Length: 354
Image (cartoon, rainbow, N blue to C red; front, side):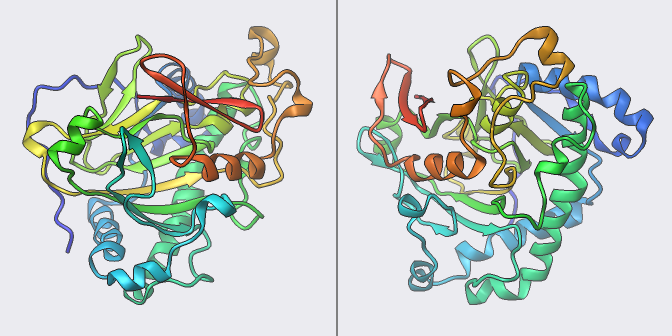
């Protein structure tokens, strides 16, 4: 059983994120009250906590125990059989083993993750994971229908659009991606920490619409606050950490922010432990064109921010996903200044923050 490490007190500066009670989203009155809170959270930090999502702490603990199985109970030779050519296909599938991504100064990552398309059951998986597939499938459906959809409805209301606007772009059984990811960070040597200035994963934006992270106690996630300062994301028992990605920023014409975040070495009292993560990454259907929803009264009043010259240049979700997945951690980045590095994907500048 994976034992979750309790976060101990450490002198770090926490981000002040909104806390959204998702149980209120079950009624029109509750959604009306929550919508401006979600709107403001996603326009400032681009991150928020979600509580009262419907799963218990025991269910939360159960999924973390399952999440450790692909790392602790699958032999290395079997792991290699379940790897995939990420760069060639632009698709996350099965394992991304350690040392695939270049972090900085010749240091490669110590991050292992196992990716499953949200369908889960009609796919091959390592033998040790197969008994848990029905539970993982149920978990994927819960994330999609009971967490993602209510959030998408609130985001639509924040733009004064019909509630189902974003929901209709995110079909569970439609052609497209969206996956459960189990992710494990392993401690690094002091030499690697020094070479990367303690950064485990550079500052970046997720490329989908909404990311659902199940909060876990080893602190490592930081977000860039509106004042340009990195602040830590604090653990809350049985809470979710929600953030918007680039695709949501594109669709919302810049109204919602794809927020910059990174992963770095934990505070001193938590160093030396592996860090296990559970994620649900949401993307629109593959054929959705990522252009601003100009019918939004909010955009008509406040203006539109585009990442390209005109909407005819906007990529589909599939094009953007493949480009971002293929390039991440493998391409030569152009150094803009002491902090920002850039690459071009489908005509759009993608930045990384060191």
